[in-house]
Image (cartoon, rainbow over all chains, first blue to last red; front, top):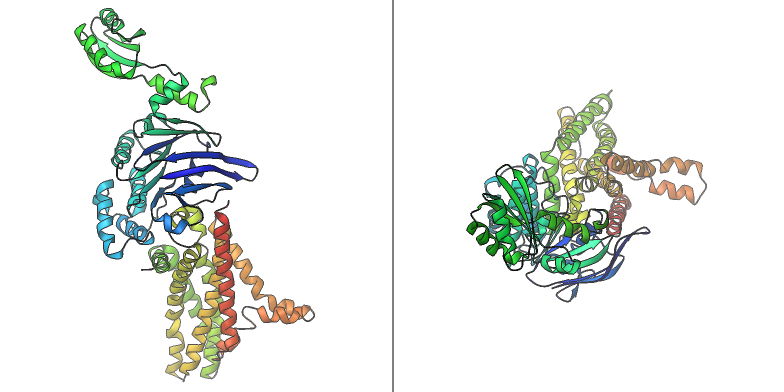
Length: 311
Length: 240
């Protein structure tokens, strides 16, 4: 659906992005991962028709986005890094204004605004002035303006930027709920955040695409060790021994986190999680937590972004 | 509704909902009232002279108000990060500029026309011609429109509203003082400077109740050139 070829953008002599090429198919939710300054925002601004590239092409269903942008802009919804909000308007007025601007039939605007507010959890604050909203709600209004004209493509630049943990979870759920109805490209510099939300990741470093694929594919390609963590109480050594006997387990490390509580780090593939849980329970453990190792995601992120050596 | 009208309506609402719009409107009405009372009504004059002096003194606050109204048009969008919303919409850059300009023109027109009670006060002891009244207000609106155009261009060049106002004022003053340059230069430059002087060369006929096509065309041309340049600035920003 979106085909980006040899896209470059220079600010003076400095390249913000260099020869970026990738493809996003219809209905995919793709994560755009990179450190601050890696070129994510520049790329999204070009795809959102806000910025023109120095060279390269962007095609939407085969049509050149850069030479015929007006016809294609209505098919794209774009949330910039800072939500573009008019403080003096109410949420409802603002979304109606944006819908009109994006060419929604005037008779359909109230219905579209209502549907979008329902979907983004803004219905209760339709009459609130944007200047009075919290950061979390402002981000939601930003997503709502990108959605209000029912675009096929959604470009979200750091939608969870500055949100507290609860708002972060809500935003992830909102982005996940867009799957199927829209083709989504969402940027972030936080791997766990988009790893949970996206089908595939595009990783940029210093303006260049350095990797792409699912989280599992990237782990395999980059040789990042797999790992599962279990937090248990009970006979720690017996449980560790039981886990070592599960076929596929390469190693088990035990760390006591309290007199009666231990974290067991198991070097094993994700797919073994049910078997590990069963083995631990059978060995008499009380299981408090079973999760993918946080270290693993961190290690993958550092390798992807080129900071692995210094980590 | 067309994108131009949508943007114009939003801009007009912006003036009506913020203190800035009301402060500018109140200041114009106050200063116009003071100047009318202190200078236009002073001494014994014929009604038509009073009306001519009213339009002369009202032209200054109109130009200043136009610069203050225009300073926010694009600089504020850049400052608040709302310009990408317009850029990412299926709207031409010229529609963005025109919509914003028309919103400001509508507000300035409302403020200018709210001064009409002053010339009408002349009717208490004298007589005025409707033609003179209409010509004077047409002149004020055209002068205001040209000043707004220059202010909009200044606003497109800066991120800060203060800098935008300074740039707009610099452009305006450059055209205002062109008549001074005309007096110290030789032809053909003296003729050129005399012809492009924003106020001295083109406003006096309006304030005296005369409408000349060349003056109307001049103000419309200044407005068009300023808005065209603003559109080019917006287009150029997409490359930056």
